[in-house]
Image 1 (cartoon, rainbow, N blue to C red):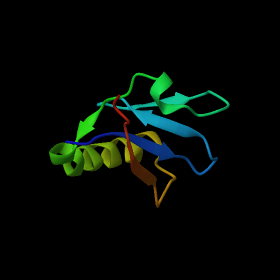
Image 2 (cartoon, one colour):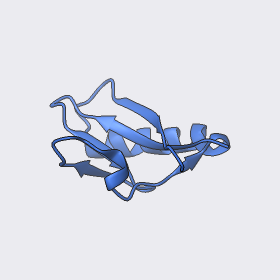
Image 3 (cartoon, one colour):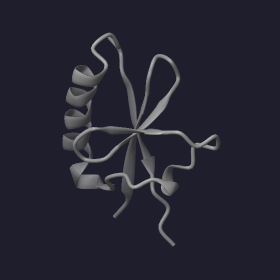
Length: 77
């Protein structure tokens, strides 16, 4: 079963990682997602997590009328 992190890109091009309740800004120059502690989401949880994260974006970034949120597959060794 695949796992994903959810990433939000703000209108100002900052990148945020979903932690299960809100978003944490990724401040790395290289934007290495796995360096940050995000909430991993399984395939069967993806739709619900996307819904929750979109609600959080509405509250955190109310001026973003078309939020860009997407899953990034977590590579597991």
